[in-house]
Image (spheres, rainbow, N blue to C red):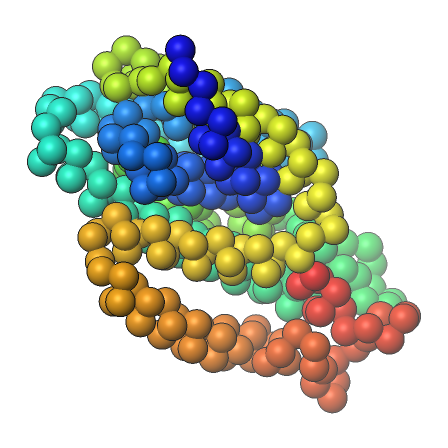
Length: 331
């Protein structure tokens, strides 16, 4: 078995990003395998999912210990996602293995990458909304103002079984075919179904339901996909230390900046999956660089925050050290 050291280094770099942000595993790993190492799309999906099945449980245990997981939501999501993920593998296999099928898988991967980039933007908006409402990122609780009683536990939500299972089914199908979506597509759909859920509840619930989802998809690819042992070994060799390192430094890294950079990379990868030329890709990315900050400032103002993190409105408060609390949270 040939071991590819450069692939292991690439997976290490991707895994550091995953450890820092909690997202980007399939959305970065699979395009990396296709674009830089020439792995066929279906083989890249198969090997990435098998590696992810080993890595996914790490983040979910953290959220389970912190109590930021809605287990009823997890159960209904898995009711749809686990069988759908296995069926997604069968659908991909039934399409065949020719160049036309690989092209379809590549286009599907591009769509999933766009959804992943949107998921990162939604996660950033949720964090900003929680800061504006005075909730701490660790607990999701509103910080009590002077003279107010202590904050209560995070509010529960009424689970809607059928829509939740359908969300899981759609997300599982996409993951089974493209390996992308467990950390982006489902979290966006959960936000639409349960707007009362706080950011850390969304992330925790999504991470825990992703474990059986990815394991189901990985099993399907082991049995029917184009699993390549040498690729998976290289991915695991790089991703295990990468995730550990990323998790260790996540508390010191500017998470907001990393998420923005990751969304930018996902958008660029999606355009390449669609076969967009280099010049058109550059112009599209430049347009995003120019328009996204203005749009983000509008959202900040609508949430009651100053347009820029380092400025304060006349009635905004600073902490005891005189620093803008929103800027501290953004860092």
